[in-house]
Length: 274
Ligand SMILES: *[C@@H]1O[C@H](CO)[C@@H](O)[C@H](O)[C@H]1NC(C)=O
Ligand SMILES: *[C@@H]1O[C@H](CO)[C@@H](O)[C@H](O)[C@H]1NC(C)=O
Ligand SMILES: *[C@@H]1O[C@H](CO)[C@@H](O)[C@H](O)[C@H]1NC(C)=O
Ligand SMILES: *[C@@H]1O[C@H](CO)[C@@H](O)[C@H](O)[C@H]1NC(C)=O
Ligand SMILES: *[C@@H]1O[C@H](CO)[C@@H](O)[C@H](O)[C@H]1NC(C)=O
Image (cartoon, rainbow, N blue to C red; front, side, top):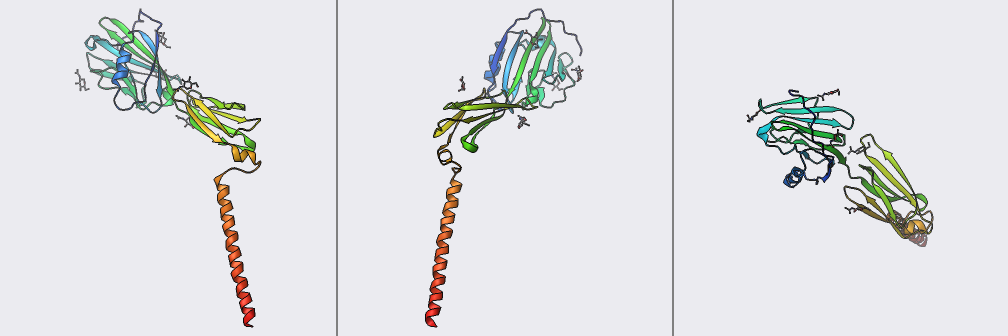
């Protein structure tokens, strides 16, 4: 590092929540303009869907007055790295930054923004732009939370139970049922920060159909399941597969009868000739 940063005097306890829409190409101007309205010294909380592009802006200071800009990155797993740009020498320096997805958004002599492309679950953490300028020091921090939409499935288990699963979502999804049943909800936490939530339900008076609603910050989803046949006729799985099996068996019987009939005709014919 070229210059030691003095701690900034202004510390506004402002935290602004910004949802970045899942846009990979273009339409980033809206986002950027919204972020520029933030006070120069503030932390923002940013929620970004996995596999999209995230751009972090520095405080909007006249570029010609900036001496050194340093991006400090502290990831969830405590790994830290820095990217710095010194304007008078037009030089960039990297400290520990090995992740090729975290780069300058464009040329730092024109734009000091940092970008992550594409965002992965390992990018949860704190990103801070620190600027040493002719007017003093400025900084802006971003608490990044990476969002992963869960994969939702609903299926029927044995003995009239229904299982709704929201797999590997981040943060954990919420599951609710209609009609409400006697349910057990389990959570499984994965190393990458995602959570699988599974709700298993049974009903006293078995409904014809049930629906499971999964609510999640990345979007809500509702699935429904017909329980009728499989639940009313105990022990018989209600599936079209069974119907196909019945049809095949019936066809087989018909062919068997025809073959037997022809066979008997022949035998009778032989006897008659004798
Ligand atoms: C921003 O967050 C960092 C890290 O959590 C903290 O050290 C700093 O005090 C915060 N700044 C403000 C202005 O809230
Ligand atoms: C580089 O990483 C090591 C350990 O991971 C850490 O102690 C050190 O502070 C990091 N250096 C910078 C410049 O972030
Ligand atoms: C800074 O350096 C880059 C190449 O490293 C060059 O393309 C750019 O024109 C330089 N900018 C200035 C303002 O000198
Ligand atoms: C997180 O880990 C789980 C379990 O290993 C995996 O199924 C899931 O795809 C992973 N998700 C992401 C976004 O890496
Ligand atoms: C999703 O569902 C929750 C609660 O069920 C609700 O508060 C939220 O507004 C819903 N979000 C969307 C985008 O529909």
